[in-house]
Each structure stands twice: as structure tokens, then as C-alpha cells.
Amino acid sequence: MKNCILIVIDSLGVGAAPDANIFGDEKANTFGNVSKAVGGVNLPIFNKLGFGNITDIKGLNKNEYISTVGKLAEKSKGNDSTTGHWEIAGLVSENEFNIFPDGFPETLIDKVTKATGHEFIGNCHASGTEIINELGKEHLETKKLILYTSGDSVFQIAAHSDVLNVDKLYEVSKIARDICNDYNIGRVIARPFIGTLNNFERTYDRKDFGITPPGETILSYLKRNDFKTIGIGKISDLFGTQFLDQSIHTEGDEDGLKILIDAYSNNEHDFYFVNLVDLDMLYGHREDPKGYYEGLKIIDSYIGDLLNILDDEDLLLLTGDHGTDPTDGKTDHSREYVPLVAYQNRIKGNNIGERDTFGVIASTICEFFGLENIFYGESILQEIIKK
Image 1 (cartoon, helix red, strand yellow):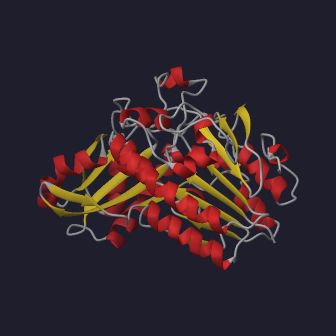
Image 2 (tube, rainbow, N blue to C red):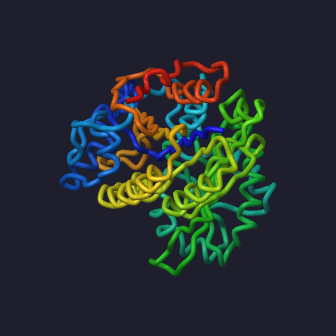
């Protein structure tokens, strides 16, 4: 049985999308601008796969490459991870989740407080690292939980492990998730942290509580047709576990890629769906292009290891879910094209240009597994040219 691996490199945008002006992102280009900010990148596997043919990336060339490449514009209205992943999986969102740039309404906070027994401080648009440093002392003294949001539709609850352990923070977040459904909020995110004043550190115990997709996705479609699926990273946070045979949370991108390589080597699944979140969470939102580049180097190395063991009939797909340009002076996502890189052993390099939906990926996976395409967008499988 042939296998498909889909890796979403969270936040890896490759240039302003056609509607970027609506979001104020006309100059956004996460990958390209990072490469310029660090004086050029040395990413031999990204180079060999042809990322330099998708957008101008300093240090990557446009010479011979070994993948089918292109770039995808998002058709959905939203600009967040949930919406992006859903569209990658074939579900186009007609309506945006609600965002709260000035904080959440008191009626919502009162409901969560009453249901959980916890009061909150903050309730504003903020960077996660900055707000725990700003409000950490008050949080430790009062035991009130830190609540904040971003340009995404997220209800983020931060708590120090000495105030609320991880399991109890998850319980609070689950309760908040049920209440936030009525406010059309995309994700409730538990944000545990540890450390002392002026030395706080967020942990990899972060957990997202998302809304169940309101329609068919590639996961549900494959499961109904008896294909075995695995989600690695925050896939279950965005899709739930109903259509996953196995779900593994990770402690960073290196851990996630090691888990992927191990799972693929054991060959127990047909479809491997992976999210690599570090570039977005650790570097994009924190406006850290140097860190972003270091994260890219880790991914580059492990993708090289994966290529070395990829079976001839198997398909590897690499993409992003939005941009988070760490050079644009904002801490929020940027409206960008995302890359599409499709690789099989022994294929020629081929540039398919621009496509109008992330759903091209779900459609391609349908054809790869011999299923009728039920999603918006056309498969590119026939454009992957064998040597």
C-alpha cells in the first residue's frame, strides 16, 4: 500500500496573497523576508526541492530541482491556523471566526468565571511572552488567570504551574471551549508556563481546543474509505480525534519530525498529517527572523533524512497554513500564498505556478489514493512528471 505524508510548516508564507491589501500585508513574504534579514540562507534540502522557484529567497537558487512546486492562495475568509488547515484538508470556510482586538466582552468572561471558578486578568490583544512577563507577578499573587488574544480568533489562557497545574488548566480550557462556541471563537488555547519573575518560560504542554470541522475533510473522507491516518503535532487540536487512528502531540519541530520518521519507518498508516508549529509560535509571532532561520535549518535537515528513506511510490507534500512574517513589525499572521512542494522519487522539477485554493492538496491526495475528488480545487497529481 502506498503512503502519503503531508507536512504543514506552520506560518511558512511565500509572498503577499491576492487579497493581502485587505489585511495590510502587501509587503509580506515570510520566507523571502527572513532570508534577506539574515543575509541569505543555507538550506540544501529546501534548495534541492525547489523552494527558490516559488518566491525570491536569498541563498536558494532557481536551477535544477527535484519536486513539483507552486504556490496556493487561500479561498477561505479567515487567516488563522484552523481555517488554513481545514482548507488544506479540503474544507473551505465561507465565514470568518470572530476576532476580538479590544478584548472579549464581559458577558463571556463572566460566564467562564462562573463556570470555572477562576477570575481573569489581561483580556487584551498581546504577545504571549510579553503578557506573562507583564502580568506574571500579579498572576502569582492573586491566582487570577491571564487571558489574552491576538489577530486570530483565539481565547488564550495562561497559567503558571504553581498556580494551576497542566491538567487543571486543560479542564478550565475545555469548559471555556464550550462557552466560546456561542461566540464563534476558533480556538481556546491553554498556555502553561514555568519559571520565576523575569525568567518565565512557556512549555510544550500548550494545548489547543478547536471547533470540530463543520463538513467533510480529507481525514474524514480517508477514514470512511478504510485508510489509516495519523496526526502528529497539533492536528488533533484542529480536527479532533474522531478520524485519526493515532494522534501524537509533540515537543517542538525536531521531536515531531523524529516521530514522523519513526512512524513512517514502521509503516502502520496510509496517511501521515503533520504540523510543525515552532516557526510560528516561537519566531514568527515574536518577530525573530534569526530564530526563524534556525528553525528552518532543523526542518531542512530532517526532511533530508526523510527523503533518504522515502519509498518510490510514496508521495511527500510540504505546505504552510498562512504567513507570520517576522520582519513586518506585527505579531499577527500575514495573508500570504503558501508553498506547495510535491515530491516522489525519480520525478522532474516542475513549476505549476499559482492556484486559487489550498484545497488543491486534498484533491491531490484523493487522486493519489484512487478516490473520487469531492473537494474544491483540482488535483496536481498528473502534473508530477516522472523522469
